[in-house]
Length: 387
View 1: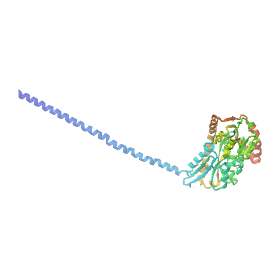
View 2: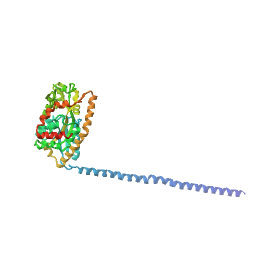
View 3: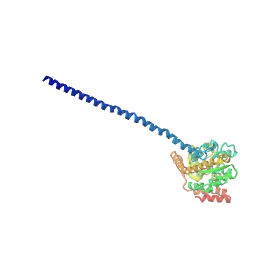
View 4: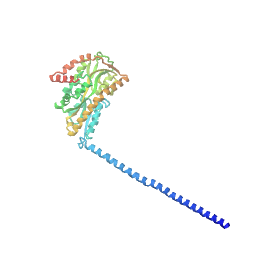
């Protein structure tokens, strides 16, 4: 019996050992895949992914560089010699004409592919408009270009330009721009060059209507009588001031601030933006909005400077002028309104003219005196008809 019992126990022990062996083997088999799985997920894909992302990243700059090289070679003046042109501006760059000049410089340099550089000297550092024109016509190339008031060209072969400064010629801005974009305007631009003066007009702009301002209050046309009013040495402006019963007094623009401050003159006239940018409200804080003249301007270049340019550079400059002229047209009215609002907010005494006819009647003589030939009468009538 004891032998039989012992046999049973031994058999049970062997069976248990077999089960334990099977369990250990199963655990070992399950562990093998668990050890291999991280190798497959972490090693193979992780090593390949950076390789696939790195290739496009290395190629991208090469694809972007090619168009940039093509754009430079397509420039209208690619390969042309570098030319630097000095351009004069009597007013600061934050005026309407200063903004137009800056746009012209930007576009001229861009369209020429950098072969033309405009050295823009603003704020009157190169002298008054007459000083600048004298320097340009004297030769030597110290000043190549300038933004000039149309009336300033009268003594420099621009007889037709005198018509643009006659009082109350343009009824509004649209009237002026109808002229500036007409075939008639081209005759005015080319006149100095055709007369052998040595300069030529490139494009038109405007700096807003011109108004009188003074250290004394001006509430009507009567208040101007007997005043000493600053003028440049211009026959039209002299006649205008005399027609208003005032005394024209020639003072250079660079000396106008001190002349108003010391009483050398009682009043002057400027477009609104120029009035503020040149700090004239500090010494003459009264302005009457009579709008006697629209500040028509031209950008001119010497024949000497123009002839330095290649045909491609000349085309680039001409196109830049068209863009700058359009830019002036779009921003001038908005800029003027913005400045006028600032002046009023800062306490400037601004008076509106409600009836312009007495002003027109007072200065009609200066029109008759200067529109004195059949040719000028015909041209002036064509300008009037463009309103």
